[in-house]
Every structure is written in C-alpha cells, then in structure tokens.
Length: 164
Image 1 (tube, rainbow, N blue to C red):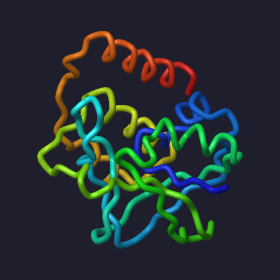
Image 2 (cartoon, rainbow, N blue to C red):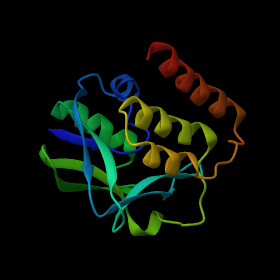
Image 3 (tube, rainbow, N blue to C red):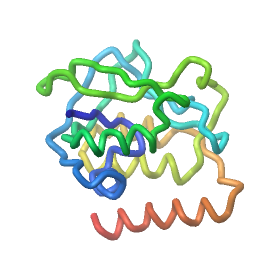
C-alpha cells in the first residue's frame, strides 16, 4: 500500500525504524491543503494534521507491507485520535493518510520542540521548498515536561542526523 507522510514520519530513517518495510518512492505537492500542529496527543502536545484549504502540503510517499500498515496504524493511534483517509496524490494515485478526528483538534496546542524537529528533518531531507520549511520552523514549540521522554526523542533526532 502507499502511505503519504506529512509529519514526524517524513524522514525515511524515522519511518523505517518504526516499520521495516517502508520504502520511499518519491515526494509530491498536494494543492489546497494545509499542515497544522493541532492534533491533541496523549502527551498533551500538538501533533501534525492536514486540513482542506490553503497553499498546499508536501508529502513523502512510501510503499508499506500490509503487515506494517497494521503496525503503523497502532503507532499512529488509528481509531484513537486519527482516522484513515485516502487521497489522490499527484504522480502517485490513491495514497493513505492519517487525519485527526474532530474531537482531537485543538488550535491552541503547541508541539514539543523535539517533535517539530522531526518534522523539519524530514522536510529538509526531501528538499521541500525553503518557504515551506520556514513555515514549519516558525511554528512555536515548548519543552517536553517529561525529561525521560524528551531525552529519548532527542536521541532519536540525533540518531537521524548522524545517519543522514
């Protein structure tokens, strides 16, 4: 199946550590959609979501095995904040996305600094336009109050940087 990543799974190293069959097949721009960091997570921070309307989003398209799709569904919280969504992506056809369920959207949320950094690593890795990367970089963040989780997530960021 084809999966379109737009958030913390953008970087191929990040996604392949989560689901081993993930194979990057390309990137695309989808007009008339917007990236938001307003999906309420279990950790009370803002995670990425896409909404209809706007200047467009950039995505990375991956092939995944069906077995790994089930693993990713669990990681992403399918049915517990995210819903599955299919959208036609230029050059790739129908691709699967995760979009936030309405009760989990809160426009006042802010992502943790490590989370935004994961999204930035992916956007830069794919060479997305500077204006798009700058928009992501301009999103306000906050420090994760859970020091253990923060250290673990920053270690993942550092690992991606070291392996890239």
